[in-house]
Structure formats: structure tokens, C-alpha cells
Figure (cartoon, rainbow, N blue to C red):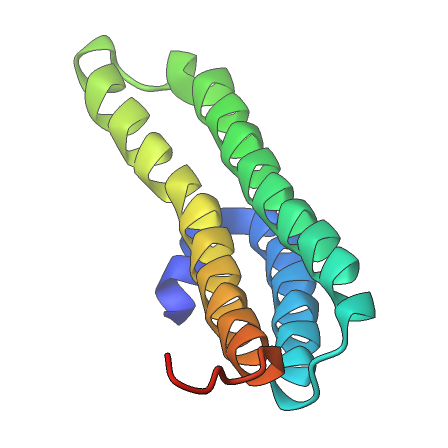
Amino acid sequence: MLEAFRNGGWGMFPTALFGVVCLVVAARYAMRPDPRWIPLQLALGMVTVLTGCLGFVAGLITTTNHLHEVPESQVPLIGALGFGESLHNVALSLILVVLAALCTSVGVVRSTPARVGA
């Protein structure tokens, strides 16, 4: 996991920050469901995914800016490696948002009254 964080570069830090805050808010909602927390969860989830995408794009920009420094025969390999490393940002954002969505689902189930005879 630490290696993936290193490979993702600087974009992993804001992605992790917003994702962890989103996860904490979702866990709070799971423990004590209150509808006022839902807009914050949605906004934090969106920011988490967007920072993951920003880190991905920034990684691709860095990769393409340095492709001229490698031998021509190595360009496809180095490009693919840079692409793969950049994807770590997106993966982190998706992992955190999925975990937050699971917590939110628990809160929704807890807040929905049980039906009698259903």
C-alpha cells in the first residue's frame, strides 16, 4: 500500500485527505443517521473522485513531459509505466468513496423504519 502511495505522487495526499474526511462523515452517518449529513457526504465524495482524477491527469502530464528524455525504443514502455503509476490516484479515490458509500448504506438501512408484514 505504501508503495502504491509513493507511485501515485503528490496527488495521493489531497485524495487521501478528502477521502478520509468523507469516510469519517459517512461512518458518523452510519452510527447516527441524520439527513443533514448527506449533502456533505456527496460533496466530499465528489471532491475525492475529482482530486483522484486531478492526480491522474497531473501524472500523465509529468510522464509526457519527460518522454523526450528516454531512448525512442523505450517511449512506449515508459509511457505505460507512467500511465500505470498515475492510475494509483484514481484507485485510491474509488476505494475511499466505495467504503464511504458502504457506511452510508448502513446509515440508510438504520434510518428506514421497518415495515410490518413485509
